[in-house]
Image 1 (spheres, rainbow, N blue to C red):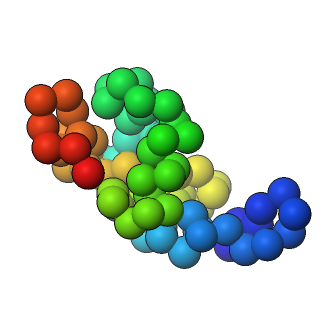
Image 2 (cartoon, rainbow, N blue to C red; image 1 turned 90 degrees about the vertical axis):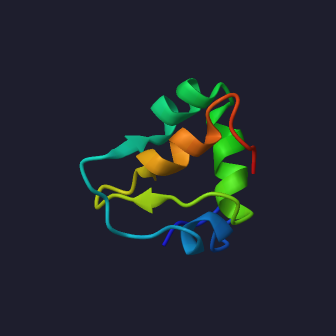
Length: 77
C-alpha cells in the first residue's frame, strides 16, 4: 500500500482495485482525455467517485468505461 510523504497510509491506495487489463488507461492519459489534472482524478478516486486500478508496478490506470463516462458532455461525478 502507498504511504503519504509523512508516512501515513494513503486513502488512495484503499480505493484502487488491483487487476488491470488491456482496456485500462494510464492516469495521465485519462486526465488529458477528460481535460482535468491528474491530481483531480486522484481526488475523485479517493472520494470514491470513479473506479481505478493499480498495476503491479504501482501505477494508476482507469477503466476505459470510466474515462468514457467522464468525457465532456457526459455526466460528471
